[in-house]
Amino acid sequence: MQTYLGKAPFYKLSIGVKEAKRGLNDLELMWKPMLPTEKDEEANQEKSIILEDIADIEFRYFGVKDVDTEPVWLEEWVNKTKLPFLISVTVHFPAEDERLWPVLTVAQRIQMDSACKFDNKVSACADRILTKK
Image 1 (cartoon, rainbow, N blue to C red):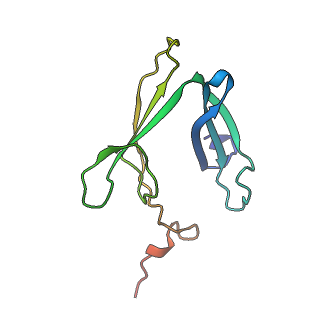
Image 2 (cartoon, one colour):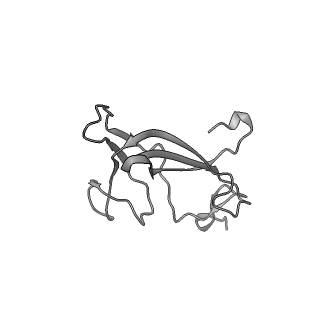
Image 3 (cartoon, rainbow, N blue to C red):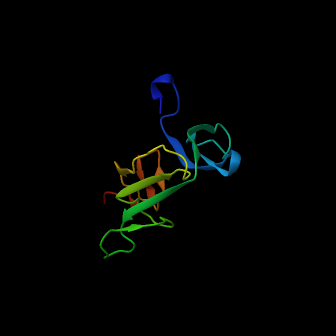
């Protein structure tokens, strides 16, 4: 996001389908600054419609289901401590709609460990800090 404008350096981003008119949907992007003092999830959240009048959107995730397994494409990525290697997004338009939208497949630029309890004072996972003896 735009840190050079004095905005927060980190944002929580969400993308999803919002019910729109005539039984169609809109693809919506939502973002809010990740501020340590923020209590209200809806506070400072902004939204923007990326694509209007779609039938549906499909997300697929390429990663490992369990430890010691080969990566495969999965329909959902829930309760995992690591991010998938790839995310694929397919937009489906109504049958009479002539728009074409390529399948978007992106690789994660970072890998996150959601079990990490980040400590801002030391800029590391608090539960993994090595101490000198």
